[in-house]
Image (cartoon, rainbow, N blue to C red):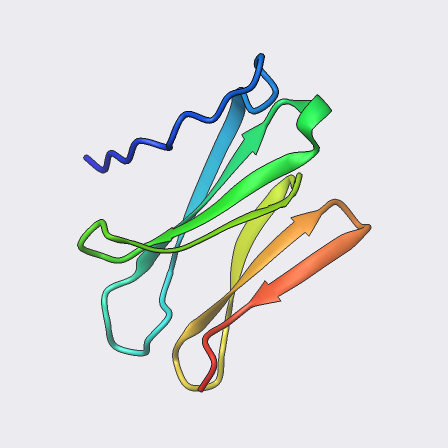
Length: 99
């Protein structure tokens, strides 16, 4: 079981968590996958938190982003994967390692 406690910075319920979604993502070919998680906060905040955890459970990346509905991965030619973060058909962001 994987557990991680988000820091509580809830100002009058503004950042109340309403949805959590995650996907495994292979950032390095042939290595164990990382876990990418979108934590969506209540609609009035218009924000979500993207967190990426190593296979050992260590937080390696975190970013407060615009609220989003989708998270998925795509395969790269070298065997690694990139992360897709999207909000319906309006916006899609691509996250991948700099090489």
